[in-house]
Each structure stands twice: as structure tokens, then as C-alpha cells.
Amino acid sequence: MAAEAASLVAAGAVLVGGCEEPVTGRVVYADVGLSFWGGVDPVTGIVVDRTHPLHGVCITDAILCLPGSRGSCTGSQVMLELVLERAAPKALVFRDNDDIVALGAIVAEEVFGKVPPRVVAVGAAQFPSLAALDGAEATVGADGAVALGAAAPPVEPPIQRAVALSPADEATLAGDRGPAAAVAARIVKRVGAIQGAETLVDVARGRGREKGDFSVPSTRVLRAIPCFKESTHTFENLKGDDRSSKDEPK
Image 1: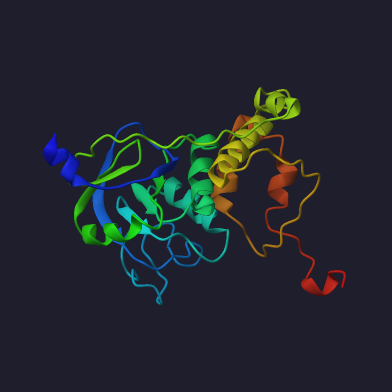
Image 2: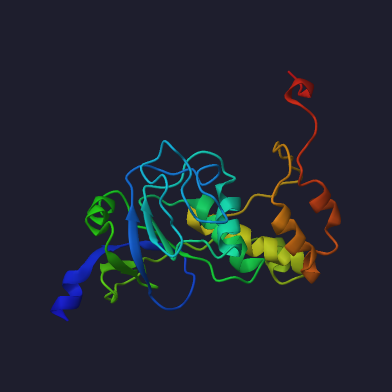
């Protein structure tokens, strides 16, 4: 037991669990945040951001340790593509609660039925200790324990605050508005828990501003999922709003 206890490097909060077993891989560490959108090739898993310390490094099947992501919130889409292309890390160990990358992992699980990478946040006090693991083999347990080697000692996982749901929210989760809405509600609830939300807020309308083709491989797969077949109008709008910024009201 003493040897196991000595191998513990950090104990974090589990944002996305992934598989039930501990995951082991080579640690890839950087003390600079990484923009997954434009910074990581979603097919090869190679960091393509020339300004980042990990440029040229493949993060596939690694234990990726970063302060967090940065840049576009479309990084969640890149994480989803990494999972679909089987190019994702085995685990991501962040300093901060990174809801953007976690969202991509959650969508991979909830919508596509894929096992996502484990996502853990260890906090500012513990994160610097992970630098000593760079290049070594480490294990991330299902409880958020990060340990040197292939055996992670058990730790007491932190208690996550539950998101209070309205009767309408509960009905949506139960499928009263259809299976697609139920999936979306589960995703919102999980991300809300990561953000520490106490309740959910109703949103009547929203509009994206992304230009150009958006996740063509993902939309093709979504069309094949029965509960999303009726949402064809959503897919037609994934190319973004064609109105330019000059058309926006001043």
C-alpha cells in the first residue's frame, strides 16, 4: 500500500468519466493552453499550432496535461472529431474546469455512443506537479486520481453539485419532447454540472455566426441516428448564417 500511495501525483474532479477502468498512457505535458480549433489535426491527433510548445506532437492515446484549452469554443467540435476518428487522447488532465473540451467528449458519448476520453481538473495547486510526469507512463483512475505508472491508487472523489431541474426539464429528460430533445437535455445538464450551475435557464432562440462548412462528417452521422432524422432543418443551417456583419444592427 505504501508504494501505491507514493505513486499518487494529483487527485482531480472528474468532468467526463469515459470508460469505467483506469486509463494508462504516455504523459504529454505543457504549461500553455492549447486551441483545439486550428491547433490540433482532428484526423491525425497531431498538434499543428506552430506557436505551441507541443507543435508536431501526437496526442492520440496520450495522457494530455494542459492548463486548459483556449481560443474558439469550436474546440468542442474538434474533440468530438478526434473521438470519431479514434485520434483522441486517453485522458485529458486540466488545471481548470474546461467545459469546452468536456462538451465535445460528452456529445461523443451521448449522441454517437462512443467512449470518450476521461477529462479531469486537478486545480492550480496540483497542476504544476504533473510536469515531472512528462514523457512517462501514468494512469488516470475513474475517481480522478493521477499516478505514476500503471496503477492508480483510489482516492475519494469530490462531490459534484447537482443541477436543480424544473418539472419541464424533468419531462424533457424523460422523453416527453422526443428522444432528440432528451439527448440534448442530458448534454446541457452535464455541462451545467461542470460549470457549477444551480439551475437551467430557458432560451427561446439563438443564432450562430460560423461561416463555411461545419462538421460535415458529424452531420452525416447524425442523419443516420433515428432520433435526429426529423431535425433536417438543423443540419441545413449548420453552414452558419450567411448574413455578414455589415447586416447586423448598429
